[in-house]
Image (cartoon, rainbow, N blue to C red):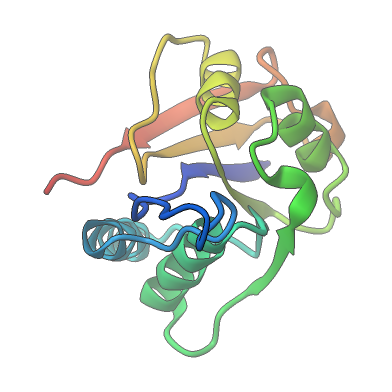
Length: 163
């Protein structure tokens, strides 16, 4: 059995074109707090991803690093900022999960809307819009990430930090 954590990046600061592109947006103060809350929630519920795959955008890598630090302290798991996950649609996110190392028992994806919301809805068979820092927790009844899909996956929890 495998565990998938899907997370939308935490709240981002506004872009200030032309000086700052959308890709380079950082987390806002609120976003930093949201990411910490999610990390603490995961730690208190013994949710420990073995690998974090995130968009290479600044706000997603910051989110992933803050969450990992809250869970693990300085000993964070491997993570992979990936330019291909920047504003990726749900099918591209799903392909990244399917390609994950089968030796990993838990995987966290940190990405953007609308793709992350669409994938959460597809896998969970629900209608839900992911606010910033929304975390969806899924169990895959298989030993292979390539088998992840609506019929093999169960939504266990949706967590949205308040404040």
